[in-house]
Length: 133
Image (cartoon, rainbow, N blue to C red):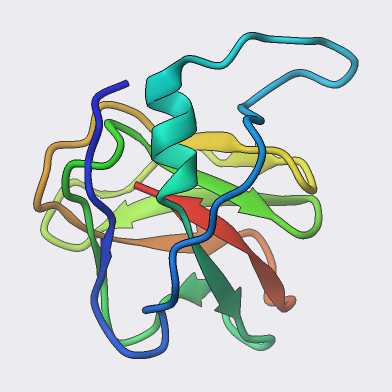
């Protein structure tokens, strides 16, 4: 995982960076060591709130990858399926990623710096959580 700085475009997604424990994407019931780069990436995460009633987050603006992480990561407050969409091409990912409540999950891997994207959720429920990219 390459270290990147997180940037979000739009006032609705800009918040204070949160620092939290060294938890990484893990299977239920397993223990995994988390690299210093992963901890740094997740430590640069910021909070998000997707309002009820839509599938896309954010609406009308886009997130932009920079140099905090090599991947697009999410930790949701509840179980959901999610994918990443790239409006400049190639569109949305073909499959969805299962995001287990309270656990980091890699939604897209090896994404270049400066790429615009948004999350597309499986349903229109309200979600909150953390994201790092």
